Structure formats: C-alpha cells, structure tokens
Amino acid sequence: VDALVVAVASLSEQPRRFVLEAPLEWWASASLPETLPSDVREPLRLELEGYCLGRRLLFRGRLRGRVDLACGRCGEPYRHALEERVSLLLEPLPSHAPQPEHGLVLDEDDLELGRYAGERIDFSAVMVEAVMTAWPMQPRCGETCRGLCPRCGENLNRADCACARAGVSRPLAGLAALLGRGPARDDEP
Ligand SMILES: [Zn+2]
Ligand SMILES: [Zn+2]
Image 1 (cartoon, rainbow, N blue to C red):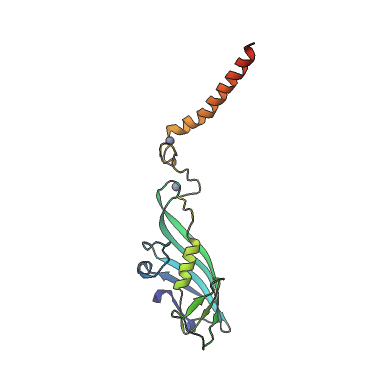
Image 2 (image 1 turned 30 degrees about the vertical axis):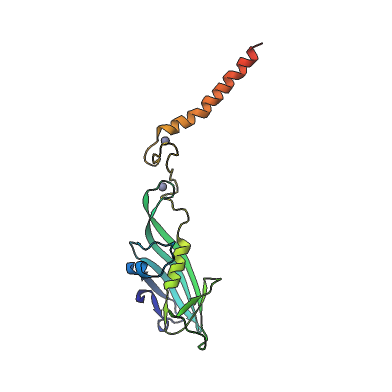
C-alpha cells in the first residue's frame, strides 16, 4: 500500500517525521489476522520519526487511531483510542539473500528488529503488529464502567436497579436473623 511505504532515499541522518495512514480499504483488503476487524471506520496512523545510522534505519513513534468496540462489561458500543509505542531498527538484508516482497521482514522473536531490502519499505506488517499489540483484550467503555446487573440485566451505568438495594439488605437481614436467634437461644433455659 503506497500510503504505508517509506522510500529509503528519503531518510538521512537528520530525523524526519513520517505519518503513515492506513486507508480504510486496506483494512478490508489486507490479509489481516482474523482477530482484527475489517470494518475499521477511521484510518489508523503510524506517526514515526525515522533516520539512518550508516545503512541501518531507525524508526520511533506511535500507532494512533480510534476504533468502534463493544464494552466487555456493559455491552455498549464505544469509541476506543488505540495507542501503542513503535520502535524499529532495520538492518540491510545481504543482497544475495531472498528479497522480501514488501522490502521488509520483521524478526519473529523481536518485533523491534527487522531487515530491509530495496528502495521502498512497506510498513503494512508493522501496522498489523502494532494494532494487534494495542488491541484491548478486555474492552471497557470507561474505567468506572459498572456493567450489567447479573440478576435483572439493567445497565448500571444508566440506572440503579432494585436488585442493588435488595442485595445490600440481604446480608444484613441474614445477620439480623442470626443475632436475633443468638440471644433467643441464650434466653431459652
Ligand atoms: Zn461498559
Ligand atoms: Zn438488577
């Protein structure tokens, strides 16, 4: 994808800022892992600073963007801000090595390392890895989400249900009964 390509010739020893924005079509067409949605509605960006150190290329920055998710606690849709630090050190591939299709191979064990070849580096794989890392395992609409009432299903962010009050009074009722019985037994003889 052209929007995710960095030309090696555009890098120098002076850090330069790149904003690589994955177009919406890319989410639908790219061979993304199944865990990632294809219906992203807002482009996600890699905001990077890149420079070279001899023939090594260094990139640092962040993935930024927002995606629509459903809260794992209350089930309501919400806008989730994705943000992930990205850091990448690329070494040139030896010219006799098989040349990668996108000009880039990421190290399988350390995603901050990779090899590049040719004049154009496609950051699609970097985008995929950053999104997968940033993707929340347990999406939450907010830190204080109270979720649904397990008894009546009411969204407790919107309203308190009657179960909450009943739930509070029940242990007290049990305690009262216990206390009530205790002295009663003592009084029996
Ligand atoms: Zn929620
Ligand atoms: Zn309830």
